[in-house]
Length: 87
Image (cartoon, rainbow, N blue to C red; front, side, top):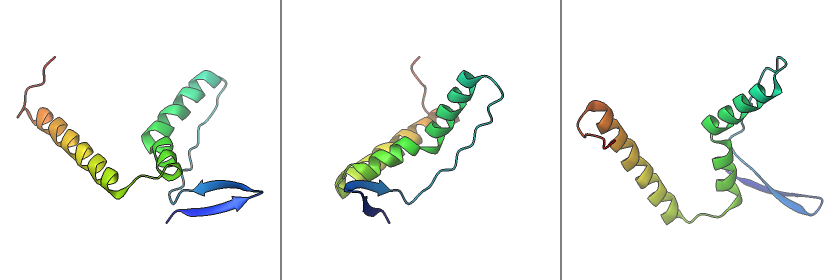
């Protein structure tokens, strides 16, 4: 359930999934920033934000889901040795 609220005339979107990402900074800020970027990527924060900001029709959602399922199935088949990868 995405909620659309307005605050001081600006519209912003609230995602149904909240991410709480913590990084321990022990002196090396560059290393901490890299860790933060990796965690954000793994959590899918940016992808979820884009989904909530831009309207995506149901047909496109289904198509993306199908393409993702085909890709994951293909990668699983390569991992099992059913299909040879070309490298």
